[in-house]
Image (cartoon, rainbow, N blue to C red):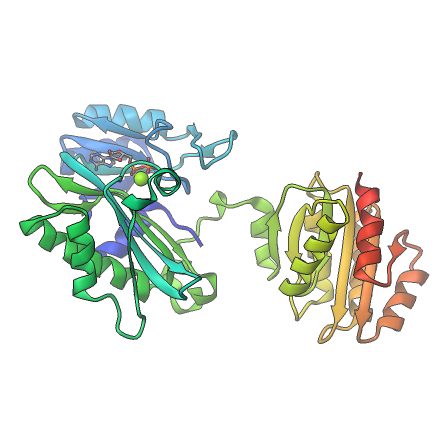
Length: 385
Ligand code: ADP
Ligand code: MG
């Protein structure tokens, strides 16, 4: 799950990570009031789930409260387009009004889970303020890393190592070490999958603060953090993906035209592979899960057919815990309700498969049946073309 910059800064502050003074405004009038309190010079920052706001015109400097009001008026309600939003952009409903600080240096700090070493990794780079993907591609030697043993945690000497490599000294180095340790604590305690500070600011006075903050969380751990779970902003997410998550479905939109409905993530991956192997492209990843019900099959179909790119569908169900007859009933009901027009290839296997097939055959639905994954893929790919 993703959250906004102001929310991430709120979490970080609780762990003692220094952040600029600031408050959120939903109207230009509020922005002016906040600026008179913490200003006079403030930065007005669009709050959307996307980076690159600065370049896109979503981060602007105001010299006084009147200017803050004017800038907030411009930014609120705009469709902010950045390299991360796609051409349609994202509607700005809130701005963060923050004290404007004097920048000496902009550095980069990021914490993620490294799958290869199965440990968190703290990354630091002197090339802050720009796209880290570009730094990684062009000058990877400018990204320094410390891998963390989760049993012993992030050690002081590791934080100091990073500070030295960033070229920090004296009081600034001390502050940076404290900053890194607090940031790691926030990352670990909130079950984050990403904590990124870009830029980490070194002020002209030598102080260290998080100028930007991005945090993502492990969805599977959200049950332990109700206060973070409540920060979810549905309006920032793909509509179909939100709909799917309400029914406990795992849905990810992809670029192809073969809609897939599968139970189990492993089978879903294998299904996408075999579609590509047969010359097609999946339109989505859709895992209806192990405990699939008639209701979830119905909602899965609804999601498939509301995607205009889907030209044919492949339903691939293995009945282990779930019974094929129940799935078949779900398909029949959904197909009737939704007036399904796209061609469909069905492959059912496992518990009660005969009963499931019978239900489908007697339903009068038009579909083609396949008895293996390979056959199913070879049938559906030409149908989608
Ligand atoms: P994004 O990464 O989405 O572009 P940032 O929060 O990183 O947004 O802001 C972009 C740039 O704006 C920063 O690199 C920094 O130069 C400037 N900036 C952001 N917040 C402040 C602030 N409080 N004071 C001064 N400059 C700021
Ligand atoms: Mg940034």
